[in-house]
Length: 343
Ligand code: ZN
Image 1 (cartoon, protein in one colour):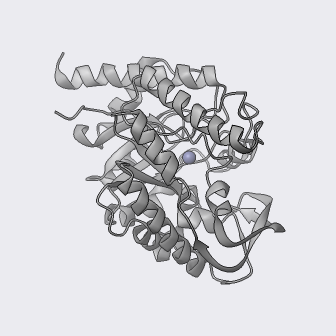
Image 2 (cartoon, rainbow, N blue to C red; image 1 turned 90 degrees about the horizontal axis):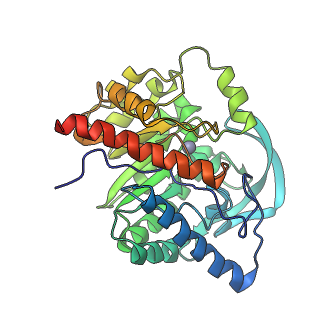
């Protein structure tokens, strides 16, 4: 029988200090050449072990082989010049120096497929693999070639689909696309963003997920959140169309964010990875707090479709905080599981 309320994470987990500077985004690698290749795999093994120790049901690689959830994938593609940089506004929120699209984008070889095969060999648990979504990818680049956000997103969607099919063949059970940009560009999401996402998942038999969050606990994001008012209703703009999409699972923020829980009603029928762990604070949730958030979500999500999860990735946190939060996630889910089963 399938486990009720299977727990998972949004994706990234802290890296060991011998691999990269802790509690830092874009942290440079501390190892080089073959040592780096071996070190990333060792870190993946460690990250998996920590997830399993915490009782996480759907496990991942903790994104141990990536410096950043978007950039690392793009670095492996042709058509993007990382030495040619322009300043652009990311997610309408902060300026950043980004690489330039100088020609047709393409993927010459798999990016994460070997890592996924390695993870598959290490565990019998279901595994989830995160990729950046097409709209979030275009939002971190300067496009001097296609000169069209939609066109570039479509090209990335085709590339993501190639990678996703190989990840599926490597034994990945759930492929997740990270689309924080969906929370910002509502018109584009409805015009072509969801269509591009569906193109990225075309022909897949494994489950597919989209992760839409309010970002890591970095300053630009916390400042932005202060401007969003008492209720965060961004999801309301895109959920009706997502509900009709072919995507199986929606991963979103539920704990400590101001998202009204009733918005989940708009995606009734989809599986929900509900964020019940706040990644923007070092305060560890109590199991009862986690259970409370899950009980609220259960008013709008059928029990067999609810997966307790983290609000977003935990890469910027300390390893101890991340471990404690994973334990709280498991313990809180177990409380509600017992309630549902009448134990
Ligand atoms: Zn996120």
